[in-house]
Length: 110
Length: 153
Image (tube, rainbow over all chains, first blue to last red; front, side, top):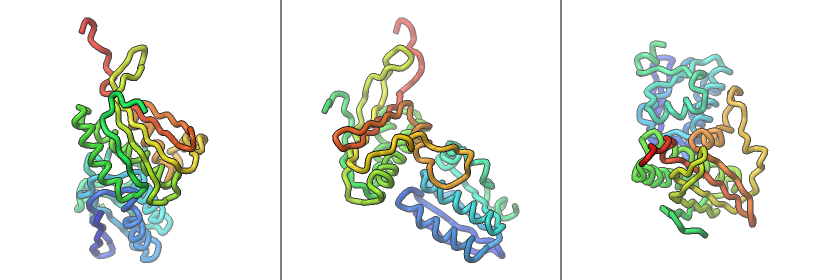
């Protein structure tokens, strides 16, 4: 998994690619929680367009990110979910708790 | 060990770094066996989650412990008839799994963790756990098709 961050006004967008699993989810969790808990960025967006696979460890990291965002009053938005990622989130029955958009433009404008 | 119907046998170490390679092999096997694409993804997810549980809970994150995964084509009873199925047996020598924890948790409670077992149950048609001779054995079954056979065929 690769992760990089870019800034857009008061928004941070994380571009994530590859597989999010037991081996890689800590590398997602750490920068996400820093962005929300320490930097208190008002809006954090995750670009999941290039994510091929996510497992329960990855979903748990997203839930942690969402909870951290709620704690500090930030927005936490996902976009670009492919079929595999969407299916796993649906299977987790947590899909409704996330704010999900189709495109980056929609996520930024939300 | 009964070798009938044996399709593939993997001897792994409990290293999360190997999960990616296992997923690739399982995806190819499921495709080769004729599972439709969504079912292939389900098989991959179920096995990945089972391995993740072994690494995290049975071995407590230790990365050099043995895990055996055996794939067989079997006949499994389902609604009064035998059906063709893929059987996956995962064997580890780690800490005995607490059967109470195998029940999973309520998903309405929004919190990280505890999803793995739910994913295994959702993606597989049968999930059985046994602990014998110091080994945990998780048996997963996925039917090739649950359609009723056509009469006269």
